[in-house]
Length: 350
Ligand SMILES: *Cc1c(COP(=O)(O)O)cnc(C)c1O
Image 1 (cartoon, rainbow, N blue to C red):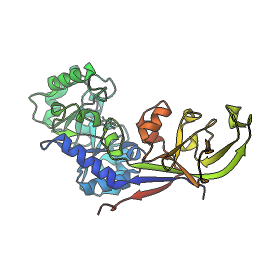
Image 2: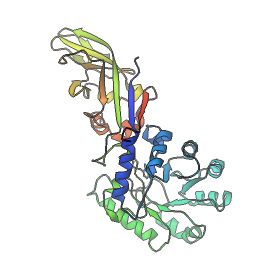
Image 3: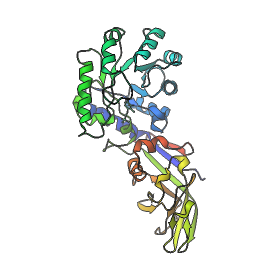
Image 4: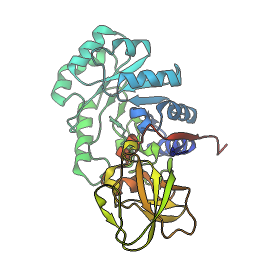
């Protein structure tokens, strides 16, 4: 079989949620962000495991993701939609009981006219300039909106992975200025915000990446492992080259393994001549460019011919691989391809 195996540890995801829930504090509820198919890991399986662990509120990016999640979770948990109430979403929001985070006066009008009495939240922009209402808009409509009974007021931090960044305190102050004195639950912190301290936690935290083992949750349990089968081994002599563009030249006799998995599977082309794969605890350098479906690896130093090589696992986290590819763990996770055999680990810990 030449399909790579992606292992996803649902027990580790549940443990990471519990840890973030403890860190959020006893008076703060902890949601789970499962947008983008739970950061590439499978929203249905992941959300069911999180619901079993105790998560009651879930966030997705768009109503379509909310529809898929509702099917997986059934009717209990609350499913909130960051992009709010877009034209064409009304039936999905209504039929599937989704809670849109309304981002503009246009969305507020649409929602209250189409679905009066249906649950909603409000997203406020405190400086990121991406989604949500700015202070002046909010001031103009707050009294009217509060009358309609929003579930929650949320905002999002631009720099929470940099605790020293002055933007954090600035956005915190803005959020207070826009919401103090209003008797509606509030939410500001994603994973990074949880680590900024209790003053950032408010009533609800919204971790995503930390659930999946990524920074800035340094103590997170690893969640994913990715093992690539060796398709072929070959011996090279001095001066022979490997791969497209002949970018790697053998400096002596060596053995090269060709493994299944390439940039079409989310293993970025930027990893060529830079990343390492692992045979157990022995690192093996990627040589030459990453192809669409294959990666070439120098395994000359191994005592035994490898049958598989690991690109994610105990020796190499998502963030390690991201560093080799000049990106962030989020992009590695959400880019994991559709061709892997996915193996979910659950119940191992009883
Ligand atoms: C993606 C997202 C989150 C989760 O962020 P992480 O950094 O993955 O924890 C929370 N809130 C909003 C508005 C988001 O877009």
